[in-house]
Image: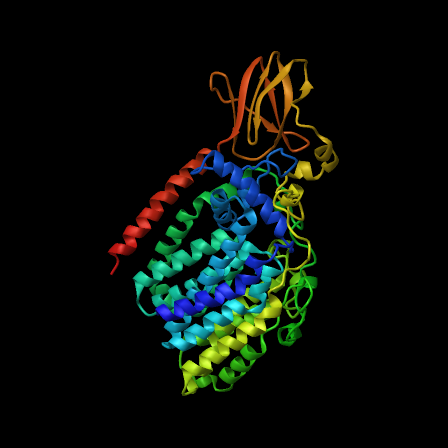
Length: 524
């Protein structure tokens, strides 16, 4: 086992070397992630264990709420590293290296368990790590959340396999960790993944009913552990009005972004460009052909399900599926080609099965790894030549392409938002106003008369406004998406504290993590 881990580590290191040894260049989502990571880092420095989810700099420094909506694992992991090394670029590179390495380990565990063969497990891991789309997530798209997702999907499948082989303890470990990590990495992709899993469970309804208790227990742990993220997101959805939840905002011609099915066999497609690669490497195609040619020899029903899973995912990624006929609420994936992540999972498990038919598996594995590493080299180039200057980040990119986390009222009044200063604006009445402390999200100020004011903060669910006697003062979202309130003479403090439900969710999550550890430890 140790030597295989070292090989996976070495491949991860070689694959990441161009990123570590050259200037970090702007790719598709680079500036969105770096600006949010840099801004979140500042909040962590203020409160290491409980940083505010509202960050400064982004959103014209009115306090932006990316972390209320965006799955937290990628940004928080990079931000905590950034606190130590004070370089958001290197922090992101470290997260990518860890995610690439761990994705190889998780695939190795799954494939080895299914095949009972170390070499098949190893080649599965390398295929999965070097799959062109996986590398595009790192080098071209700079999609750090989706990159992390590669770690957790194999663990979920491994957990299901263990359950259907009556190993409840391993099921809980792999399934719960896989799902928690997946939800905290990319909720949208995990939603579609769950739909596919449910189809599988319905198909195997007799066994699924047999294990209903285990699924219920696992689901409770998953929801409880991830509740700080899910509860916050749900509150913004139900109690607020934000651009991300407006029907159609996150749906931009879904079918038009789907793949021509031939993209999968267009080897070398998009080399030398800043565009995402979707093809399957030549060696992997050969291995897959050899496996499917004598597929009946691999007597494992679980492989059949993974094959079906891969075929469905391939169709969903392509123009063969009528995406634009679906309601917009079912097209939140935006880009159907994201299903290539699931296709890569299926192919990585199935393609190396033919290795079992060769005598010298060790030498064959060495040759395959060398050639796969060499074939991956053209994919280790970032999307543009624009070098990122960490000392001069353009924070407006942190809003997101659709400015999706703005209040709808702000998104509909962008001229006002763009030109507004950082003063407290009097809407009704007359008064002298003194800003004592303006440190996003915190705002302390003093007024000397009864007035209605607009505060220089975007409205998000979770703010608290206190007077000098610590009494809560009511406020509301105004027509521009900012916090507005009626005040009497006095000193006031505004801060983002989260709601009572957020606090409860944190407690539930901590108790659930401890409880899960004890539960698994005591499980036979």
